[in-house]
Image (tube, rainbow, N blue to C red):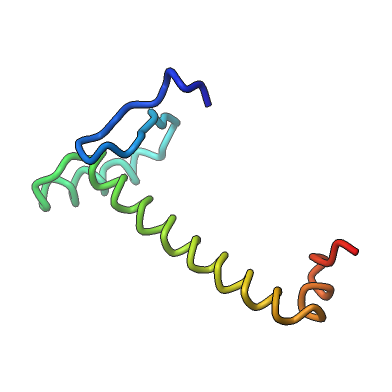
Length: 82
């Protein structure tokens, strides 16, 4: 990521633009939900992705703690680096 692409939001968190093709049925649903909620499509997508990222971060933390305390489990999934 090019540092020049970063933008600052109202809460000073760094942002960058995310683009890509999306199925029209998904976009229509996003528009419907965002219009109903009175927010922009971008705000809705940011909320959805933010929730997803927090969930994944939690999963990673749990897995890390589990494997750190259980070398046999780490070895079983190929995480042992010895």
